[in-house]
Length: 241
Ligand code: UDP
Image (cartoon, rainbow, N blue to C red; front, side, top):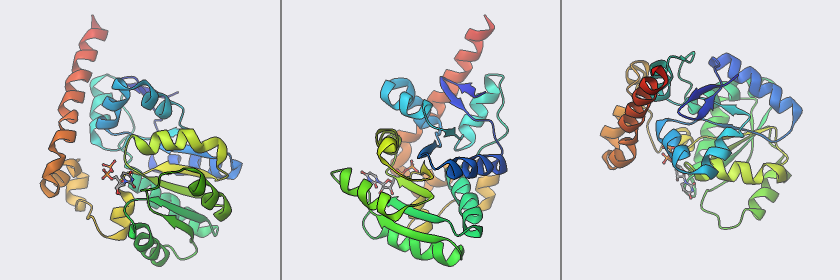
C-alpha cells in the first residue's frame, strides 16, 4: 500500500527494494514507468489534475529528496527514507550491467546525452547504451520509433517535470521498453555538465541548499518546499481535529 503524502501515494521502499521491483517490472517488459516526485512536484500535482493522474498511475513512485520524507513524518506516516531518482538510476544500471542490459538516454540539451553515454559506458562495463536523443523534439512519433528500434530495458526520460511524467503516461502504450524513469536533470549530472552536491550535503539532506547556492535562479521553484511543509503541518492538524 502506498503512503499518502498530500494526495500523492509513495511506495515505501528502500533503494534495494526499489531496484528489485524495477527488475521484476523489466522482466515483464510492459513499458512500466517510474516517477520520483519531490515537494515541488507534489505541489504541481495538487494544482493540476493531469499531472496528478500521470504520477498516480506510475508503477513506482519514489520520494526524491528529504522534503517528502519530512512531510510523511509530519503526517504521522513515515517513509523508510529518501530515494533520489539519480541514486535509483545508478543502482539499477549496476544491476543491468551484470545481465548485459540496454539503456536509452532521452532528454537534456543536444550533445548532453552523448556525453552521458560515454561516461556511463566507462562506469558500467557490460551496460549497452543503445541510443541517445536530446529532449527538445516537437513530435513524439520519431522518438517512439527510435526507442522501439533500440529495444531498451531502461529508458531515461529527462525532460524536467511535469513534461517527463506526462510524456511517459501518454506514450507508455506505444513504447516497447522494460521500464522508463523520469529523472529530471540526471543526464546533465552523468554528462558532467552539472555537479551533484558533495556527499556531506547529501547525507545532511541539504542537497537542495547546495543546488540553490549553485543555481540561485531556482529560488522561485524552491519556495514550493516551505509551502509544502506548511501544507503538511496544516493537514496534520486537520486530521487530528
Ligand atoms: N529538458 C528537456 N526538454 C525540455 C525541457 C527540459 O530535455 O523541453 C531538460 C533540461 O535540459 C534538463 C532537464 O530537462 O536537462 C530538467 O532539468 P531540471 O534540473 O530542471 O530538472 P529537475 O531535476 O529539477 O526536475
